[in-house]
Image 1 (cartoon, rainbow, N blue to C red):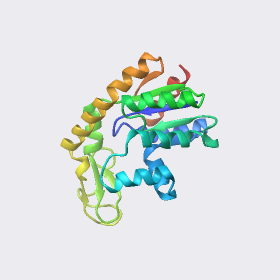
Image 2: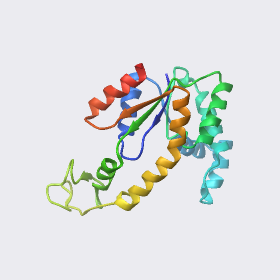
Image 3: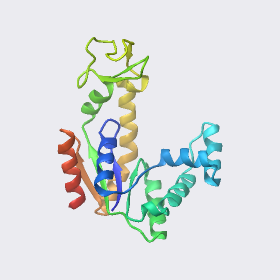
Length: 214
């Protein structure tokens, strides 16, 4: 099973990806992980990517696609994989299709985990982190016993800058701008399944499995 998993920040995509990995017994392929591994190993593509990263620039699509191509050729991908965080743009999706055709492969499904923006904002903006030990809390789902104080170590809890509502809204806008063309692209190919990300983890997982079987 060869899958792409789409989902905005706070949608629970990471949790569902882990469950699917265990269900299907296939690897999760993250471009972020691939970049770090390639840089660490000093591969030619890793060295090229490091040059852009060291200068504070974006790694070009050609380098990312090269890393994806190398990764998909590895033995553990023979039975399938979940692409997580890639493609992000229509240009990357089109390049991926060319790459897969070159490998004699095709995608089986694209699952889009969908959650209303206001719910996402509530999930992300409610996060609190302990400055001292890094323990995580949520003002709605898992608050500390005393507001602003960590249960584990008594340190101060705070809201990270990237969890501020204004920042979250902008992140969601960027995601929507990037993803809308991908949704249309894969929907036109009959690969897309829209999955509601509202409810308990088990309920969402059941919908994900139905999306795979449909």
